Length: 340
Image (tube, rainbow, N blue to C red):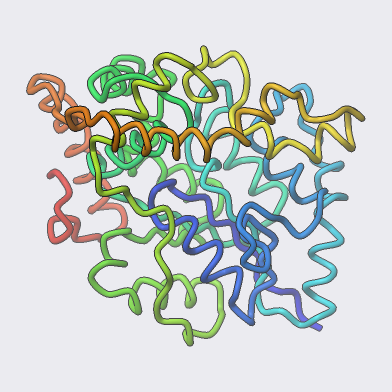
């Protein structure tokens, strides 16, 4: 029995991550996809050990607590299962591994931990999206998770506090260099989200070839599509402003703490904190409430206008990064509308 090809799909968020997890890796017969999207079941993992490693150890644990040997022990049963059952590839996917959010560990630490854990020869898959399109989509997603700030406030945070925000993570030449240095250039598969719209077969074939699986799957279902009504988003933003939760908190605690259940249960021996579990459970009814309120009392559409001066500064930053990426990776980003 030969060793399956190991892979890590690290995101980015809002760049077909859920579709890849649930309707590509999670259903591909050549892959033992350990999660997210194990057996195409949403936010699921192969077992609780893999879940804890992906959601807690890689994303959140300070260096004092990072224990590579312990994580390897938790991952080994999955790797053994993949080998025993003759899978061609075995891997992990988590869009939160591609950027730093709130009090998570640095993006470079996540890359280093993934390489140490999965070993030499592991393939790293990164899907990039035009920066302003990414920022807009991420903002709308954060609103669903409790963020109450305006688009302007969100963009100002992104640019002005780039020493800690995701701003430099979406300077994609940084990500390319980071993963090339950790995994080796021959093991980095960076693909362009916009290609998925133009030519889904080519997009998926690039990923398949990078990890040595069949190219039989030529398309995927879309997941987490944007709502049509900007009025609904504005209603939701106002609700979040009045009743802050999750992404609307002061960044003292991790987000999506329901994903940390394996850590709470198995390592600390406690239940998921009630208030944070309630945040997750309330997400859907709150979104539904915003829809009802917007039908009864319509409001103006959510503003997605970018201040001219801020847009100019961000364009200068992203354009320089995109030009460098073109030289490094040989991409033609102009055809996909990237700022150059």
